[in-house]
Length: 242
Image 1: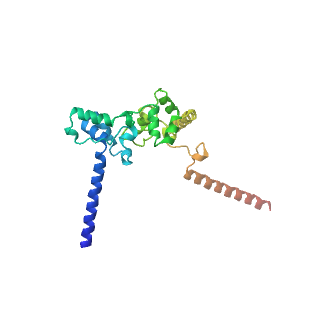
Image 2: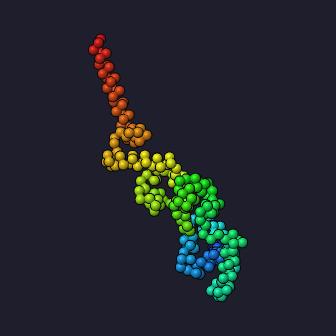
Image 3: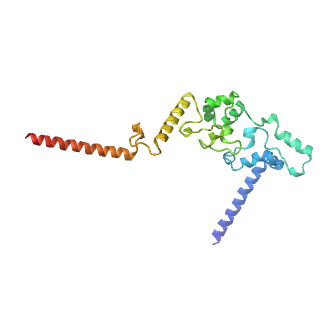
């Protein structure tokens, strides 16, 4: 029993140490402390970031916005206006690479630090080129979120810009090209045709690859019966000639 209590006590102590370490680590992020203190819209990015995929993977504010997150804020509630302004200036210093809210190519460069392959694919797509050219294409954060980043659900996320998202789940939204648009038109025509014929698909679809397992089995069984009947017919004819 003594060994059990010792192990239990050691587990509790280690848990407390780990929890204290996490809290200390969070306190060193000056951006988080200040934005939570300021509240309102300025606190919203931190609220959205907490629990996000980026936060879970250790991606902190400075990796996307630059600046110095290690500035010692101290007790923020006891800072005078000039002291607060000093901490803010140091945390948001351009000498530490502070860029604020990245946009345009700068945004692609920031996202590309971790997601280079995906950014390169999107930058070469019709929508990516439209964004970089200032012609209204969506940026990375429009679909993936700014601070509460997520893997977007297609076509749900597309409905923010497109009224008709029919067939969007069958294309690659990251690399839309002229051929993708042509393919999407073919998909829409096919789906509209199926809807016109009714909810139930035709017993024998137009394309063999669309055949279901039941349909294939039924056709195969019918072929066997047909061959059997033909064999019987040939047998009867031969018997009559004897």
